[in-house]
Length: 232
Image (cartoon, rainbow, N blue to C red; front, side, top):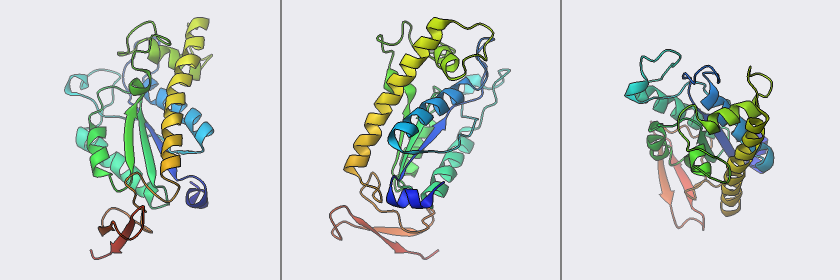
């Protein structure tokens, strides 16, 4: 984590998230997380955004609990974990956060966007960037599906017992498509909100940890300025 880089170059941070769950014999249990990491790294290379280390575990709906090969986090645990990661990173000067998920049914991120408003947080899944795109996919996105398999084979070519050239090529295409749309989003954000300004037009105060009382002075300047009242 480069504090000077965040201060003077790019203050966008990407948090890739996924899950540990069974994907059959043809994919590793961490496929969702690994796909999210792969896309995030591609986006980071092209935009200059920092890619945060990914927590490998994710939250799951009730019907996933008790399935062998799945290690779920409680809904509340996942929310608190993401909140702590983003707020800890915000202290270093990062003002814009993009949570990218390659795992479906992650309702905890909806809560995160509301809880982490001052940190300027957006959340998306690779479904949003692909959305059953027939230019990339032949089948609909689901679980252990065409997209998951092709993405895993692309990111980790040579690690699968059954390797199909078509799957690797398709993986490259879908990763490029998802990463490309995410890059467009980040570049638009960077253009509209220069470094030092988050998505709400706020400037994060020094050492902000989410526990201080903060006032928003709309008239202080054009983009808005945070005034700190550090009374615990």
